[in-house]
Image (cartoon, rainbow, N blue to C red):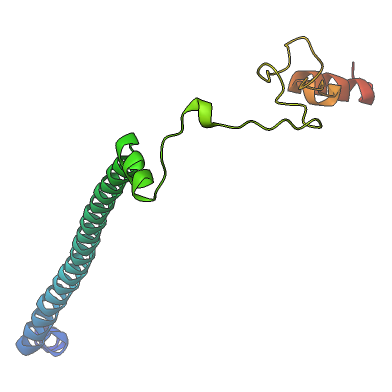
Length: 155
């Protein structure tokens, strides 16, 4: 009986090469899993680094554009200064006019500019008054529930 049980155990016992193959398979699958994780990590890191670099480039371009806009504003202010405008007017042949040399024309149909400044309407006037809201929009949730239960006969 002992011999038979020994043969039975020996028949179903795994061969040493099979255990070695299993161990190699486990190690290889672990290495493959680590390689996949490392590849995903490197891919994400590379993408985030690229995005960060693009953000830096766009910020630098924005700063350059803002500097250019400020330079153009400064040039415009210089061109529109009183001294430059007078110089350009003289170069174009314009001369300052004395008040005695001005001729005024009288136009009978012209009423003239309205006197005084045009002001906003007074606070008490009806202009710009806000229309009151309907009662349906001023009820609270509690008021609405009370009215609902009152309609159902619960109150």
